[in-house]
Length: 271
Image 1 (spheres, rainbow, N blue to C red):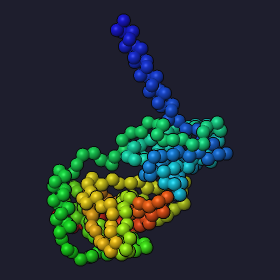
Image 2: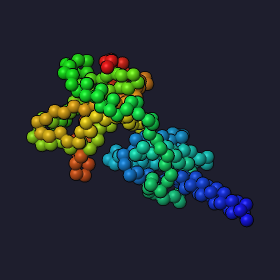
Image 3: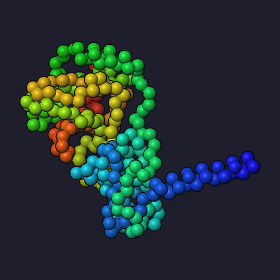
Image 4: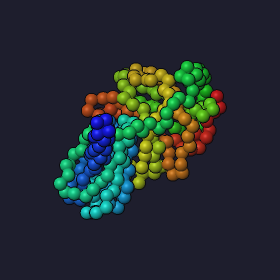
């Protein structure tokens, strides 16, 4: 009796697994455009065969991926999407009977964090960040690494290195009378030059620690923030892009960004 129960249980597990695999299949067509809707901003998109499938984030909606076949195809292709620290992998098949919209929440996602564990204990990271913020050094070689728009400025103040940890010190300045509410500060590895492609050639790098967690910059105020990352270098032809986004109604907030090259990171000061 126990053996029969165990066999039934294993069969149910196998059926559940198979159902999950088949649920991660998207049908796409060359006569209509399908959309994958995510709960947050899409961090990465990649298709298996660019000649068969076009996939890109909709410029006006950062949480939506637009997918379309270039022509009918027989062999399946693949699509990988990263959103909110989860990675989704799909099998793409050609068919005109598929839905136009796919909610990503209905599929199975796996943990896609850049790395796990802490570089150091939080109290040690806090002390090191305090040391950096207590220093009053000049602008130095990073004075051109900044983004400005409508009275708001974000600028790289310094980069420090301690063991395998990189400390990026940023200065955020509000020259207006109105407070600036920070929605997010993202770091992206992206192409150095803008190219016309069917896929986004960038992915987000998540910090291991953030010191002040600045959420608001009052009017006529300048604040400094420190982000800590596991040591990294940037491949040839790519840059590290910093992006500051304002929290505002209907996605109308000011967005600022600037780029760092590998040579900028190699100038990090030793702590």
